[in-house]
Length: 631
Image 1 (cartoon, rainbow, N blue to C red):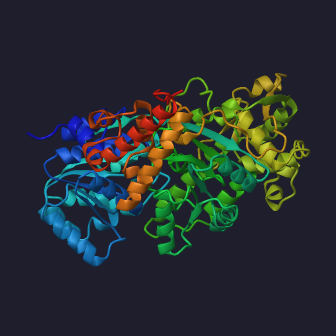
Image 2 (tube, rainbow, N blue to C red):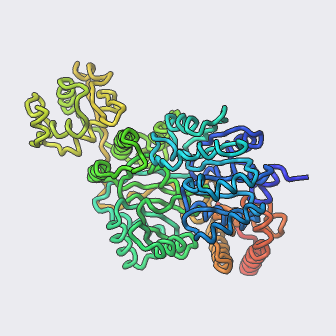
Image 3 (cartoon, rainbow, N blue to C red):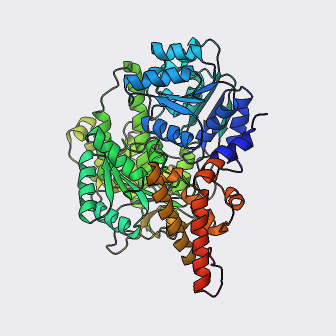
């Protein structure tokens, strides 16, 4: 008699229970139903297709654009005793031929494949030779023109499904999808009456913050020093910034690596492996790094520059805290970031596979996303709620645990500024966007201002004492207050809002301004003690931290001996649970989350010996006492 889903979950993956949404999606797949799962990074979406893949009779094919994800997940599956393979451009022709031959003989339960390979003759032959019981589309937002990462190669998936002798169950997963993108995924993949499950975008273990330091480099140096020994990623928008910041960190003797597309492939792979294997603690990279990297113990992600969309930011920042432990997502903003992103959008080369209409649609959506990203950075509302509302999730009260919620503000009377903005916008409703409105109110003398005739309007230059950046920030606050409205398209055109008449009638307008700290490079956050030994509900004592450090060193040694990433031995969360439970037997160790039969058999005795030695040494030094490891 075969195993059931709970037995697979525990014996193969080491977990006793499913996370929210997982079981419902798994049940849908096992019943032969198409499914669409919208699950944030770290919510366990890979288990939603890996568990049924091991229970279904045939082979499961997972389509992914991410070479690093394929490699990591196949490595993790093989370490757990599951035969899996991947087919992508990182393999030689001989390796591909060997993998296809083994697959045809029934070697693998799960095959990861790049979308470009689906319609190749060899993969078509293989698809007709083996019984495909499930087709999973990972990063499914790539199939939508409305998504942040549209890839025309994904459009071949529907042709591939149609080419199969028998249509399998089709499931699609992504971490980032607005309602419009979700509808497009269902349409483009021709999903049949799919079970759609959205587990929510709120990752409670993440602390979100936007900082505006005078010197971003000083901020990063200060932060990394204060979080010594913790794994973190610093994203920069340009290769030049990556190389410069990497050099500064190395000069300061900080174990850092770098990653960008301008490096040689061999150097990129070596740097990525050093980070995954914990040989270095900090990775400085462009957004070319991280897609599919399954490193669970990243304690912070810093964005040196503002990304071009909330989708990109949520996906990149979401690489922090995948183990459920507390982590920080910090965005360093300056007004120049918006200008650089807009310039990059205008100069963005179109994908030659796109039609002109598709390219226009993508560009227009990029403009809308950039405006929303800027709003996130300069607004004063709860950052967690900004993210949730962007993805269509209802919000209520501010979270009380993000950068904006924990800041101190002062209020200033901005009635005069509000009336000036209203006066100008009322004379040209729905004609111009934020940049031109701010330039006109500042009194800028540009060719574009003269061409539009904005320099002839009564309120031209009325706010000349403020910079254009300060005026743009006020326009966003006025929009949040309902004094102005902004069109939901790529142009972001301004209109008088529902509260406009009240302001004209004399109602006072108060705007919020952050209190500036005295020349500090980093505002302290309230979220956590040292994260390497913390969990959402438990903080380890000094004794617990001491044991955690010993277990972490043992994990590093065992991983190096087997040439695998440390998290494939046990995750940080599992090590923390060992420090809390202090198991003495294999049965007690197996009961902990993240301990499955395979890693128990491979590593259990060594960890039990380490825990036993620590308890014995502690008892000798403290008259037979047992350590108190949790606070």
